[in-house]
Every structure is written in C-alpha cells, then in structure tokens.
Image 1 (tube, rainbow over the protein chains, first blue to last red):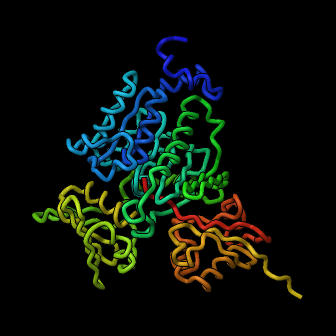
Image 2 (image 1 turned 90 degrees about the vertical axis):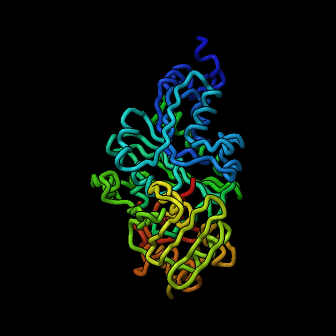
Image 3 (image 1 turned 180 degrees about the vertical axis):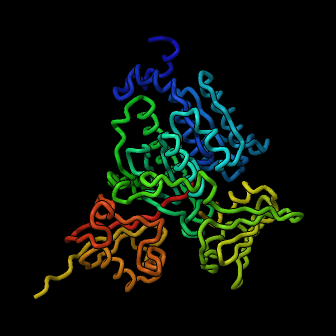
Length: 346
Length: 96
C-alpha cells in the first residue's frame, strides 16, 4: 500500500470503501456549515477519514458550556476566546496534516452561500436553526450539490441526505420555517453529548458513501434516533418530492437564496442593539416561553413581552408576542440572529 | 352493526410528553389519521394545539407517519388505519 494512504488502512480494509473509495474520499471537498456540537463532530470524523478539503464556516466563539459536547475544543480555546472555525482548524491540522482545512469566521447568509458552496462536492449540516438550513437547501438545489441534514435536541436526533433532483429535500418535509418558539432548542431543552455523536456518525457515513462513489447506497429515508431509549427508525420519504409537489425541488422556488425569505434584522443605531423579526407572522405564548427560558438566565414576563438577561455574555433578549425581539448588548446582526435561534428558536 | 374503530398506537415526541402525563405512546381508537388528531384534541388539547393549526392541519414543522411511511405517500390525513398501526407525530429537530 502506498505510504500516503497507509494511515487509512483500517478504513480501506472495510469492503464498502476499499482503496479506490479511499482515493475518492481523499480527493473530496466538503463544506461544513456550523462548527458547534454537530459541526465539530462532523469535521472530526471527516478529517480523520481523510477528506481532502474541509471548509468550516462558523460565526461563533468557543465558550465553556460548549466543552460538554463539542469535541474539537478545550479550555485553552475558551481562555483564548478563539472563533470556533479557527480553533477547529488548528485541532484538525494536528490530527491530520495531509488534508487542507479552511476556517471561515462568518455568518452564512444568502449573499455568501454560493461562494462557499461553488467548489465543494458535498455540504454537511451542523447548524442550529432552520433559517440557515432552508438557505442551504436552496443553495444545494441551485448548484445540484448533495447535502446531509442533521439535527438534535435533548436525546433525539434526525438526519436526511438530500440528493438534488433525486430525493426528497428539506422543504418536501417542512414547507415553511417553523414558527418562532415552536421548536425546542438545545439552550432551552438541553442536549446529551451522545446524541450529537450518533447523528454526526450517521451524517459522516452518508458523506463517506457519497464521496467514495457509492451514491447507490443512500436510502430515501429520514432516520430518527433517540439515544435515551436506544431506538433508531428509518422512515420512508421515497417519492415525497413528487407527492408533496415541493415548491423548492419540484417548483424551483429559491426564496431563501434570493433573500426574499428569512428573518429581518435591523441594527438600532446608538443602542448597541439589534431587532430580529421572524420570517413568518406568529403569536407567541409568552408564559410558556418564559418557562422554557427559566434556566438560561434571569427571566421576567408580563402580558406584552418576555425579557431574558443571559447569565454570561452580557446580552439581553426582549421578545414580544408577535415573535419580534430586541437583542441588547450587540450591534452585530449575525450574533443577534444566532441568539434568537438559540433561545426563541427558528 | 358498525365495526368498532381500530385501536392504534400514537408515538408522542419527548417535548410534548409532559402535556399528556409523560406518556411516550397513546392508544387511540380512530378510523383514519384525521380521527387520531381529533381524538388527541379531545383528550389532550394542549398537545393538539402544538401539533395542529386552527384548521386542524398539522403545523409546518410537524410530520406524520403511519408505520414507516410519510402520510403524504399514502392518503394524507384520510389514510385509513388498521389495528396496531403506529402513528408517529414527528416535530422537526432544529438543534445542532
């Protein structure tokens, strides 16, 4: 065996990969969207497997509460206040110097996503919100790039591999962005480290199959797992794109990519604050939201709004019944959208 | 005499279990999926409001499966059920 692939000998011995598959993996280029819990496990798995090029995009910095489940980071990264993409790239380069890792510290939005996608073979999803996932879905369909959705909260997770033009896409399953506050987030419901690794493992396997040229092995299923009860279910979504008459993958709608859809942010001049308006009209159950936020900081509620003062970071979220929020303590729209997704949900 | 409605299992997602006695599964007698949702509205209205909109349709982030199939691959909410079928109420998962 040639020296350059000797380090992958155990993976090559696996009959599903082989030497030819490994060489394809080593020539593969992957965009990792988000480098939190899922994203760092994805990047770790792909780097160790020898994927030749990883572009890691994340807008956030490493915090102490990340270390419970975000495998690429340590206490030095927290002390050094490193951006996650940069800390991940440093760690991955020490794990595998033969691959190229490109860290990008940025908020993925409709203006930059095509530039991030244009020269990769595959996108893997490590995001924490559906707004960006709908954007990824649009960009993947537009460029005919496969992508692997993954999500987890509490002890449960889901993953779906989208092959543009062939299989169900995210909007076949979820036509519009969930209402603000409709879904649990890891910040409100918590998350177990092991579910992150289970979902990421399934995503990495899908990625390796695609990169190794085994697209035929990708099943048209939504895989649903629960690490607390040890269950795994494969739910059939074959033919859903035709039956659902999907606006995106059948109808060609690209509202998230064009910027027509998505939450609006307005920087409130001179107030060190940003207003976030959700993409869809909604009516929040404020007492219910206040209850969910109870563990995240100081919470106050009246019949008009919920105010959450975070215990770390110095930001304060004031959320109104129509789903709109004013995030005080930042003038960065990406940071504000991130806090909104974490605590209100999208 | 009219046939009795079949008893089917309904899988409740973890987030909604506190609203129905912390039960992960309910047994419900219903002819079709719409009947299941109507029965949930009757016995656990707080669960129903989180699953369905004012028109009684599943909310955009809720997918419904009968056994292993998405209901849209069958007959949607009019999918007829048989005894022992598993109806899964599945919210999208956002975190990561």
